[in-house]
Length: 315
Length: 163
Image 1 (cartoon, rainbow over the protein chains, first blue to last red):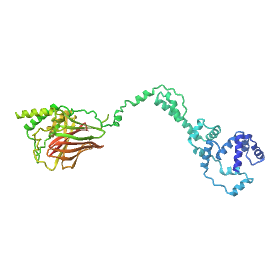
Image 2: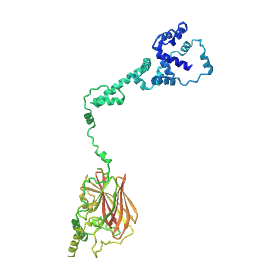
Image 3: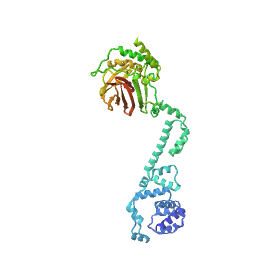
Image 4: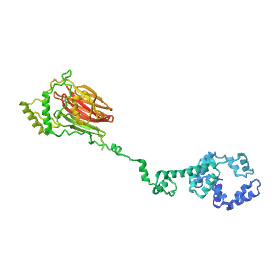
């Protein structure tokens, strides 16, 4: 039965109301007083027969992507159908004498599937209809659905208004984007309408951003174990030998004639005596990658040796 | 007159010896190195001062007056002693000194002779080890570790090995 129905629908889809397959049906309906007048009118419409056949084939899972989407939406809306029992299958093959259509309509009353079908559709479907991206048959079905759904029409109108607002906002914010608008529109998947903007984009961005100094942020990531500038850089310890000798001699004199420093309870001087160059040796030295170290001795050899550490050195 | 000869000898020796700047100056024959005035104890007293040098003021802590002449080349006007700590260390022992600004300094006594002590000094900040150095320094002598920034100045840490 399924194959017979599919074959009939395919014939009607191709031939429309002029199909010879509708001849027996017209003849039977013309004399059957139970058939409503609108059904006879529908059979007389040469285009509607093809559209209805198209829609029914879609519901049966045959057709383009749009109709497949509609069929899927109808299936979701209708839920899973249990297979008919064998006795029902058999009874369907026999002539059906009762006016089933009237009985069902009287029992069900007014039923609208449009809202449920549209709710189950991908939003891109409606957008595609607006962009004339659907096949003629699909567009006709979609238009019919929209015609009956005021809420959907309002939604599409709102989308269109939003698109205009977005384009206007982009133009106002970006300035002269005439040369790049085509690429942006293509990326967004919308039509690249011609724009006439004379505001210089580059200057606008620069004015908005102000002066940006990225040196510190960049250099903070380029850390090396190297010597950076130190504000008070004393002279290296590797110089001034001759003066150092004089200073050492002076230190010897000072040690002899200077007053005694205070002593702690062990008899050790509590006053600081900085080691001269000859009294201290740096035997090993290492430091962190983000630091620099200098061993320095300012001025005379009697001056203290200083291990100067500078943290967070950047180049 | 003997001092004049000694002075001349010292000047001549140090002026023409490149190793003098960083290395140990050679001792002339028959010269006794700076002999310690006191017998060597079992422990070495490590003393660490934390001095804050700044240009925000020109006050000098009275406790720092004796060493002020050694700090004036640093181009800072104010010096304050923030803390001073000591630890008595035997060989291989280590002491930890807390320094301001989430920093700390550890000092380990590596070796000690009658004349000098070998100490390992490490400085840490919140990111890890900043400095690791080993120095041999005459007993009762000091040197300085300096440079870490603190507030609007720098920290100066005189380290003394006293025994």
